[in-house]
Amino acid sequence: MEPLTVARMPPRQGQVDRASVRGVEGKNSGVGTETSEDLLNGARVLVVEDEAAISMLLEDMLLDFGCEVVGPAARLSKALEMAESESFVVAILDVNVAGEPIYPVAEAIVRRGLPLVFSTGYGGAGIREPFRDRPVVQKPFSQQDLKRTLIAAIAAGG
Image 1: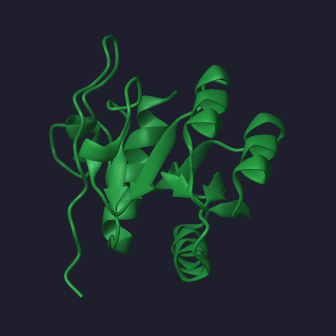
Image 2: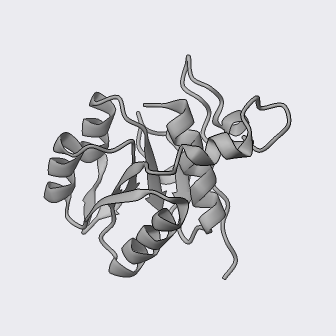
Image 3: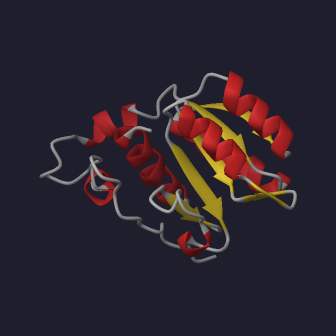
């Protein structure tokens, strides 16, 4: 299976360009690899995904990164409850959860000032305003793509 690339969105005003954060391993980024990967070690990550196989794959990847998985939530109502009450540093949100758009959950996370990453098979073009500037991983994604995107999202903040 050929991994797909992460869709890059333009930065919001006043935020760091995710492309520059994405290159955290680069010489000019000012952040070393060890420091960037430390962002994931012990990080609590909310997972909202309705497909069991993808959810298990995400959990395995996150555990490999040293993260703690919150959830996963497979229904919008549960995801919304968790987004409002659970402690986490970043969320991975499937754009369509059991036929329902994820945007109420995304809005709750944004209200809390927390970063999020959208997961979709349709790419960044399918993301609604005002969320088009948020990072996206396109299914199927590689472990490295997910890691890079999570690090960039956490580093950029909510």
